[in-house]
Every structure is written in C-alpha cells, then in structure tokens.
Length: 595
Image (cartoon, rainbow, N blue to C red; front, top):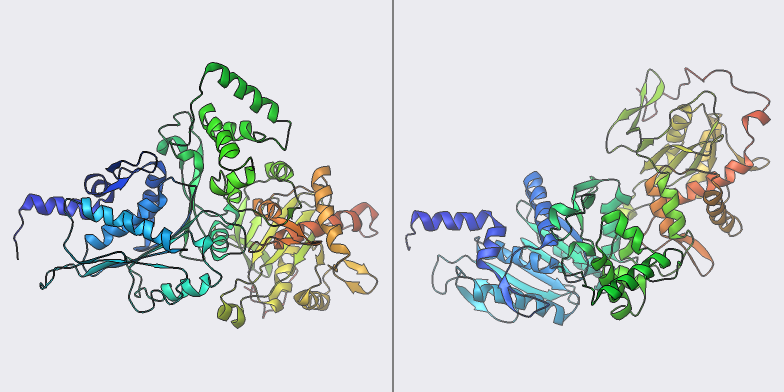
C-alpha cells in the first residue's frame, strides 16, 4: 500500500470533514447561465442547505431533508456534489439518484461524471458509464468499493436489490402515481440504525395531493415548528439592506423530516438592471399604481419589497420573468419561483378565502402565552408547559366573560391508517370568547374517538364550562353521547338534537359565515395554523373543503364559531348568570388525564 505524507493526510482529512472546502477546491460544475466550467463555490441557497444539513447531522447523526426550491438556484447541484463527496471519499457507500424521467436523471448523472472527471484527487473507478460510477481498483483489495447509480421514478422496483446510504429524489412532485410505493421501497434499503445516511427529496411545487406536497405540509405544520432562522442578509450578500429574519427550515418533532425552503430572491441571478433611468421611473410608476389593482402583475410588489427589503432590480426581474417566461401568470411564477411556502402550490379549485383577507386576519394572530398538554392536579384541569404540546392558550379565563367551545371530532390512528400509510384527521377543540369573538385557546392533535369528550370536558372546565358545539360526524355522535352522560352543556341545533349538523345545506353557510365574520370582525382568529388552512380551503364543483393533501379541521371549527356567535344566547339573555368560577369539578378516576 502506498504511504502518504502527513501533509497529504491532513489535506485528505480536511476534504473529508469540510465539504465547502472540498467543493471549492476539487469539484467543477457547469454554470447554467454562461455554460462555463467553474469551481463549486456555494451560492446563498446552497449555503443555507449546507448549514441546515450540518446542524441536523450534528444533532442526530443522519439526514432526512425535504427541499422546496425555486428554479435554478443550485439545489440539485449541491445535493449531487454532497452525494459524490460521500461516495468518493468513503469506503462502502452507495449513492442513488432517482428523477421523474430519463433525461432529468441523465442530466444529474452527467453533472456527477463531470465532477469525477475534473476532480484532482478523483478515486479510481472500476466502472464508469451512463448509469453508474463504481469507485474501486480493478484487481486490488484497496478500492473504495463505493457506487453512484441512477434510475427513474418509472421503475417502481428501483433500489430494492441494494443497500443505499445516500438518496437523491429529484422533482418528486412530478413522479408518477405510485410514488408512495417507490419511496417506501427505497427507504427500506437503508441500514438500521440510519447512522450517517442521507435522504434528500427535492422539487418545485406542483399542485396539491402528491406525496411531496403532503410531506412538505406535514413538516411545515403551518409554520409552528421553525428549525433554522437567520437574517436574509447573512446569506444574501447582494441584499445588504435585508436585515430581517427569515425561517429557512422547519421540523415537525413527530417525524425525522426537516423542510428547507429557499425563496427566489436569495438567488443573486434573480436581478435585472434597468436599461435607463427613464425605464426605472416608469417601473416605479407601475408598481405604485398596481397596489390598487388586484389583477395587476405588480399588485403585491411593494408589499414583498417592504417585507423582505428587496431591491427595485429584483422586482424588475420578477415582472420580466412573469411577463416573459410565465405568460403573464403570477400563479405560474409563484410555482416556479415561490416567495412563501404556500406560493409554491397551485390550487385546482377556487380559493374561498381571498389571500388579502387571510393576510388581514393573520395580522390578528398572536403567539400563544402558553403551549402545553392538559394534566389534572388535585382533580382540576390545567396546562403543563410543553413546547410541542397539544394546547395553545392565547387568553386566560376571565370571570366577567362568557366562553363557548367548537369541536371538530376525529379518531386517533388506527390499523388502517398505518397499513395504508395515511395520516388521519386530527381533533380540534377551540375555545372562543363570546363577548369579544376572540379565539382564546385550542387543543389540536390525535386522540381516540372515545376519549375526545375527556378533552372537551377539560378544555371547557378551564373556561367556565362553556357550551360545546360538536360537529355531528361519525365520531361526533359518540362525543355528544358521552358529554350528555357527564351533563356537560351542549349546543342543540334543534330540540332534542345536540351538536352541529354539517350537510349540503349548512356547509356553504358555514364557509360563507366565516368569510363574512372575518370581514366584519365578528371573530378574531389568534391561531396562525387556522389562517394557513383558510388559504387552502377551496370550492370545487360546489363542494367545500381543504385542497387535496391539505387539512381543514381548524377551518371547520372556526366556521362553527361564526355560527355560534350568532346562535348561542349571550350572558345577558340567560336566566342563570354564574357568579363565581366553577371549582372542584372532577371527572372519572379512570380518565387518561386523571392525576
């Protein structure tokens, strides 16, 4: 075996443990804009990806990343280089590229082949062809025995026959209908425990209902779990004035997946200089006039500029791209070059709640004063702080006010959900201040259907046993029945019939009621996740609900709240006004929340 000097070993050690240095000094890529070969020096979006990945790797030792990207910022290049680094610098590592079609897979693989061709410390290859690189030394026992291979998503058996340590799933949103089956087969090829392995799933948004969109929304969780936040100017040196924080990654603690989102303005190439001062003045006039024209291409230009501190040149590029590359369609631009996570996904139906209204409603949202789980202390319900808990509290109980609850009941995870790999609906219990219309608290999560009444009971107890309005679905009847046995106050939609009936007649009334209620200020929503669900609540062929792959549980609860604001009698109309807060109210010792 050839002996190496200490300095050479030090350099190899540096390259092995410092990917940015290795990429800059050893890897060559083709510039998409100039077609010239140049070193792989990380651009702003790539540096964000690297920092998020290394943070996660330091925490758990392995990487599970979902990248929601804009076009041509270098996301696939970063992942390809990272996979090449892992296989060409380590023994017995297998990397696998899989894209939606053959040309795309071939393009990604050619990029890796170029890295191997220009790498000054490239390892020897036993095989190098159009479908694989095998890093090994023919006839020698000292080769790396690592591989870099490719396949397409049309091959549902891809990956079943080999172990995988690095997986790059490209443009997953464009994969065929069996993508869940393919992903499952690929994930089964990773060693257990998954130490030092990496999975990267990347794509632009392509509508709702596909495996990529569902995974994005699960990890994002309406922004509840920010994972990596930084000043825009820390990464975008072309935006020195952008000293505003931006959340680049989210992590739902219920899964391993971390979502990375790279907005278009982080790419330095997304700028267009003005041809003359006259053109610049004309553009300023256009974006100023567009603020009052919702259908104008530049309608939100000033708002975006103010929020993220964009330059006029960036906005000018945005207008040019919309008109030239996207046929004047803002929604198409947003899909390819999103500013926010929701921008990336185009709805098939008609959004029932206008974006401008949702923006206004969201201004009333607040961070909860308490997040936690319900516990019982000496027989009394309370909230034990837990940053990942099911309960959010915005307003504590006030004896002078009257409260009511709205309940969208759902069952817990069952065998069919596990077998079909489906995420069941979650139960929502909202508490509302009847006097002010403000959302006071929310319980949100999975719970077995026969225990939902226990949650309702505890939430109600903390707010003066306010009247509960339960949606009458399959589980709702059970919840109502159990609450009746406990003599808990219920809303009756007709004599002798407790609960709220959601049907073809009441569904439009509920949807429109929330629309009117938000416009009139009848209710004040504090939960940002509720507003996020409003943005994806659509009407398709006269049917109302969340866009495919999106949740609408919180929206349903808010819709019922608008109905209850009008239908429930207020305290001044009641004969029996409570003088003191109920105390000592206890529940069955067998309760799952019993102390």
